[in-house]
Length: 452
Image (tube, rainbow, N blue to C red; front, side, top):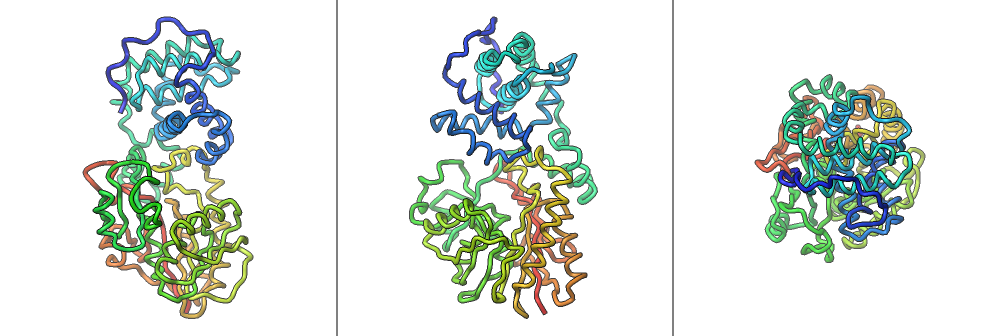
């Protein structure tokens, strides 16, 4: 929530020095992240990892910069509408970092517990640092002051959840799920996401030790956000962070001790860990060396083992397996609540290119399933082109495969997450809790197939 009582002490004149003051380096990074992500359409997390070292921030300032950027993307539609409605001539051209600086400041004023005077003062200092934006310091100062004065009105007017959703996504969700469900999805994306973990065993005991909620599916949802590495059981490798919906495909695969199972597109390894923890002999395949290094490090901490293969899953060959899990690369629109930049960096063209890749991966996965074996295909996308439509096309072209419908008992009795075909379809607004941050999960699709 925004700080409601700090509008009275904002500076009357704009500071004209570019020297560092507390908080300014964090704002520089936040605005840079917003600008870079929107211009290059790159993931915020990857952009943060690439750019943040050069800013030399301590942990607290780095976390603040990231929080500002995440908040800006979560409510970008509201922020842009509020700014544009108050710029009579629109945003000035050739103004350098003017827009991202204002977006970062507006995110603080409207949605974060940052004193208004600090948000405005630091934004004005930042504007002065670039000759292109320094020409518009007076305009920026006046605009930010007005946002602070009119905050309550801005927030009360932003009732339409689709204001923070790009139009192509809103149209897709309306067409796929209907108006009411699409609105519920969009509204859920405004809330901070929950933090879930998977455990090797004794989920109820660890839920108590970690003061977490034991979900019907067996995942644990932490009630409070805190440093993960300092929690009981982390150093011992007892559990790992994994969204509750993301943990379901392995439950559907139902690995058995001693089975040969391959996890395609496996990094960073949450599903590989689940399979290994159940005693199966798992092969983890991914073409990304850096991501596989992270997978290997995760398995080492957890005391689990897997055969790790750095290959392109579309061309990799091996003896058929008892079961194949394919968590295919996708537009990731089901993760928007956790990664709000996804909404503003992906396009229909991205979705369609990824759908073509998914079809090739499904073909490759099918070749790796022994007769009588199981194939689970899944994506963290809300788009039917990357889920339901993929499976319909695949089954029409592969009479040697058949769907094995999912039952509510397999997913903690949550029948609302099973579609009419017996496939898994989780939606972000499901799994309700009276506390918004403890509600919902990632939007996931999964289908379980049997090779005849």
